[in-house]
Length: 150
Image 1 (tube, rainbow, N blue to C red):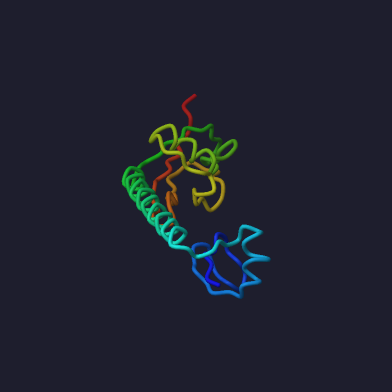
Image 2 (image 1 turned 90 degrees about the horizontal axis):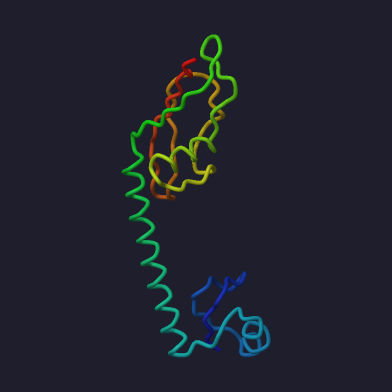
């Protein structure tokens, strides 16, 4: 029996694939558990439509990510922080701080886990930071930490 998988089934295939399985396996296991449905014309057409929608969505996300990358690339994000002798900060600048500043200055919501900071910034200076706005788009920003004026 030909069925269209609705979810990934280990050893059988991924969601959206059409596979040929034993009648009993399809009727007694896959279909009742909503893992698959019979491969009718309507089901195949529905799956193709869903693929098209997913491709359009991925394309929109990719374009939006490229626009965000263009906004962020080579941008300077300036922080003013209290510093002691030798430019050592009282506290630190973290990926969370960088993500919040990007949201404030550029209006882009960036998850702190997508800010690639090698560790918290603990001294005055310039630091190159990579921001992964999409798996295919990585922006390079410059974080500038200046001592706070008293």
